[in-house]
Each structure stands twice: as C-alpha cells, then as structure tokens.
Image 1 (cartoon, rainbow, N blue to C red):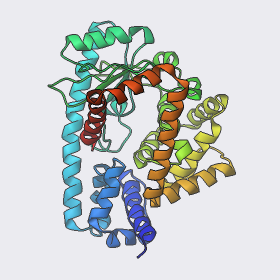
Image 2 (image 1 turned 90 degrees about the horizontal axis):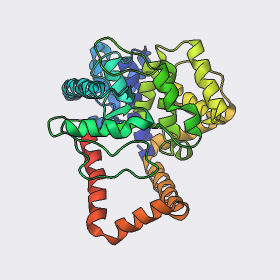
Image 3 (image 1 turned 45 degrees about the horizontal axis):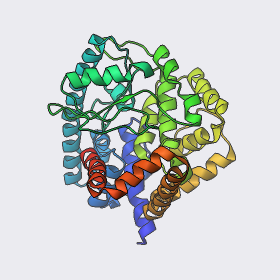
Amino acid sequence: MRLGSHRKLHLAAVCTLMRRALGLSLEKRELGCLERAEPRRLIKIASGHAIVNLLAGATEDPAIANCLDPDVVAFLDLMQDRNGARNAAFTAQLQEIGGILRDARIEAVALKGATELICRTYPRATDRLLGDLDILVPQGAIGDAVAALEASGYSTHGAVASPDSLHAPRLWHEAHPAAVEIHHALSRGRGVEILDPAQILRASTATRGCLLRVPALADRLCHLIVHAQMNHGRYQSRFLFLRDVADLQALSTRATAPTWTEVSARFAGAQAAPMLDAFLVAAFGVLQTPLPLATTPEAASWAEKAMFLLRRPEIHRCNYLFAMSRHYLGRFVSDQAARRRYLRYIRCSATLRDFVNQHVASVRDYQ
C-alpha cells in the first residue's frame, strides 16, 4: 500500500470514530476502515489532532468496538478516564480562579475549552482535551487580574508578554495542573472586527454554580473559527485541525439559523467571509453533515486542498515551516520591538534556550 493510501485509510478510521463519538450515525460500509487500521497509526493521528480521548466515546457502540483491536479499545478507555480526571482538576482550578477574580471585582469570561468545562456542548465531560485555561477580562483590568492571581500563588516565572500579545504572560501555580492565560484581546487584524472583547464581555452570561461567565454561542463559534483560520495562519497553510472540527460539531448542536446568520454577517463585515466558508465546507465535509450556510465554489477548492494535506502531513509540515519563517521574517523587518526581542534571543544563548525550552515544555505537557 502506498504511503498516501495508508495515511488515507487511517485518517478515514479516525474521522469515522470521531463522528460516532460525537453522536453522528454511520453506515455499515464505513466500518471496514476500522478493521484494516493499524492501532499505532490510528492512535498517532488521533493524538496529533488532540482527539484520542474523544474517540473512546465511539466504542460505546458495540458495532464499533467489535471492529477494533481490544487493546485499542482499552487504550482509548484509559485515555478517556485520564482526561476525565484532568478535566475535573482543571474545573476545580477554574472555579478557584473565578473566586479570586470575583474578590478582586474583575468581570471575567471563560474562553474556548474553559467554557466547555462550564457549559458543556460535547456528549461527555471527558471529550474535550484542554491545553490551558483562557480567560477574558476588560483591557483595563488585566494588570489587576494578574496581580490578584500572583497574590494567590500564581507566577509568570519572569516571562514578559510581547507588545502584540493577546494575553498577559502565562501564569502557573505549583498546586494546579493548568497554565492560565488572561486575555485582553482575542485576535489581530480583521479578527478584531469579528471578536470585539468589550462586546463579548457584554453579551456573556452567568452560569449557575460557576463564578466565571460564558460567551454567547455566536461568540463561541466566531472565536473557534477565527482561532482556526486566522490566529495561526491556518487559512493560508490550509491546515485543518480535527479538534476544531469536533468543537464545531459540538457547538453546532446548539446553534440556530439566527446564530449562523449573525456569524456570517460578522465575517462578511470584516471582509473575511472566504475564511468562514472554507472552514465550514472542510469541517462539515469531514463530519458528512449539511452546511448551515450557503458557501462559494472557492471554499470547496480550499477544503479539497486541506483534505489532501491531511493525508500528506509531510507536505503540510514544509508549508507550515515556510509560512512561519516568512511570518517571523516579516515581523523582524517591520516591527522594531519584535526585532529587538529576536536579536536579544540570538545574542544570549541562555535567553534563547529558555525561550525554546518553555515552548517545548508547553507542547510536551499538552501531548
């Protein structure tokens, strides 16, 4: 079997399991890929897309479990159990942070995975894998929020946020598992028009039993798509992250036609409709569910290329490295503050080593 075909088989198996875990129905013919999939390759792809714990939900279906190696079923169950314990610890930490910010009289809104801990949209509490806890506060309150957390034992370990950062330096607490990012903004460029922090704070709602507020559903959808397409250059590199697809399906179960109309209008108003269309066509194509909005033929072309790159990750890796190199070179040329910071890293090996080690540690913790 050729490399591309091998990858296609295992990607199909992962997507099949993901769809079933999210509560979508399957046809019997779709189960064949599960019987032929090699356990190590299947787990590797699922882990790379941060959904390995989610897939355990699919094995609740006996037809699915019977198609998989028993060791795979046991491994997925173990990952689900461990993520359940991890999410419980994250939830307790989030509640404590909510109390700290409440006592400091700071209004705060949970974001992304942290919102899922408070207001669940996935079928199971163990389904969503989190990397950290993201929290939005008013821009004028970010210093007070960081100070309140530091007074409660959190530390940035000397890190300093870059001038264009969307959040304060990451905060860590030796007694808690998650890093905390206190945001004052959620995107740059056109994304700012879609995700106005002040509007998100105003539209957020309180949730019974939690000291943090949650964003409106339209804001959650917009944040997901902006983060998926704009914040890390994935639209340009045509990269589709399967956890983003799973998040979209979970949120879509709560979305109404007016919700989607609002999302569409916000992207159109920011001249970013192609990014929205492309993500929806690709994601709902993987899910094999109807599109909630009319899209353009160009979106189908983007989705086709994104699926090709999912099957050929080595090509995407080269494209991604090239895009990142171009991004940082552009920053070096056009941004004086960034240029000084990069030169400081280059001149001081200890600073550069600390910078690299911090990012490597973050990735390893997430994995």
